[in-house]
Length: 478
Image 1: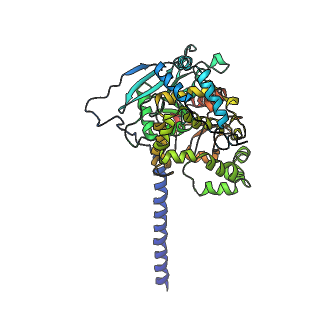
Image 2: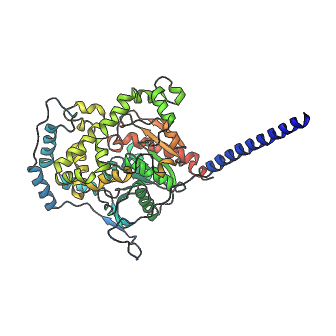
Image 3: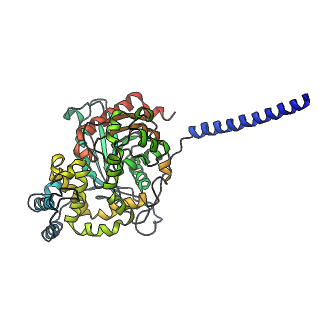
């Protein structure tokens, strides 16, 4: 009997040893995989026409100016004069898209009062440049501080726009960041601002080949910053700028001192996310939701699912057949204006769809709105800008490597209440593991830099102040 017990006990010991070895291997695997912060590979591409030449690329940075030609204006006015309008449905406001009666007023203002030549002078008040990167011309605005406190240096800040915006979105926030003291803000941190146009947007050349996605754009902008001599810098973005800057943080975490976002979407939704959608309204603490998260998210069918469905039709078109609808927008300035202005209405405040004028002039002025539209019109970039959706979404949401990687860079998030989709910090934290600043903004929507430049500037300044004071960018490297 004793031999039998001894045999059993030895078998038990072997089993326990095997279990401990397996558990130990699993623990070691997770510890090692956690230590190894995987980065996103830099995407070296060639987006120019034809084959990549054997010669070295010209890296010259050339001055550029926006121009208004008489030929351009006469063609525009001819098209505006020949526009065909349809009567809106009675009491439709912006529920069917832009109100067509209000669109007539916008076109009348465009023809009779809007001064493109004057707005070109406004655009050229900041220095513009172009440089060739990966085969295409990249346009950017580069603004240095007019004055610096003694012993202080400017911090480089890359600001990236989205669709249907442009570099012009940042014109109201630029002076607040480059000369904060003159605008009643703290001058502890002063910025040197670089605002590029995404390739295929504005005055940046459109890629000539398929496959130019957010990782491609991030790689191009990383190369741009290095070319300008910035090996450590901050990045800020919303809309596509959110994703491009996020990818930049994944590509070059040791070069990005901090990442500031006014949109932080999560594309990889796990079981916990889904459970929090079902139960978060009743057990917010269990899922890390704050009171404001509950207010913004629930009832989820109305504020989440239905709003996304109502606002995502354009994205489905642009992610599948952008060139088809783009032909009409590229040919008709009135069609282009209708398509873009609708977004500036309902993405600024969903309640604006109940107004005949879409609330557009409550938050913006027509000169600014038409200047943004004119950037699309004169550059003929609407189709190439829409293609960016297909390049990023044609393989499916949640399938790309960058969607599965976390972001280690110190991150600040300004959460505006009227953003199309609210992302609570508890969700964002799974992607951005080093959130050092998350603020519920008191007002504002999707186009924050243009709509609420002071609020956004203050949030950027406090975020950078925190990163600098605590030297968070050096800690992440250790």
